[in-house]
Length: 91
Image 1: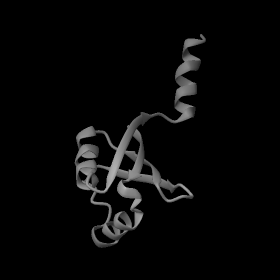
Image 2: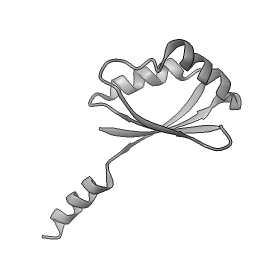
Image 3: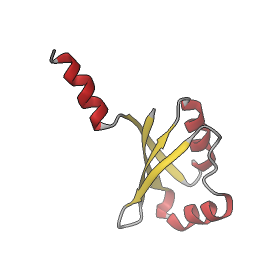
Image 4: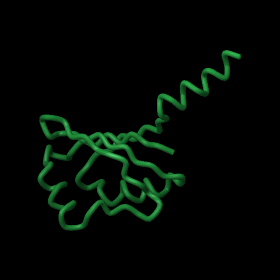
């Protein structure tokens, strides 16, 4: 399953987040896959897509970063998959 992860850097401190990333990496448990990320121009938020079959892996990853980042996590599906699913209802 895909998840859109919206991160807001606590205290607007992106430097602390990137410092930990350099020192420890993503800190992802096995089975959690990083798909991609995009940071806002003002460096206050990051939008990531993550993938996993077991949501508890995502929860473990969030717990490792929650002191530096506030998270909003939204399960998402690819638009092509949604389109195909909805097309089946048109039959």
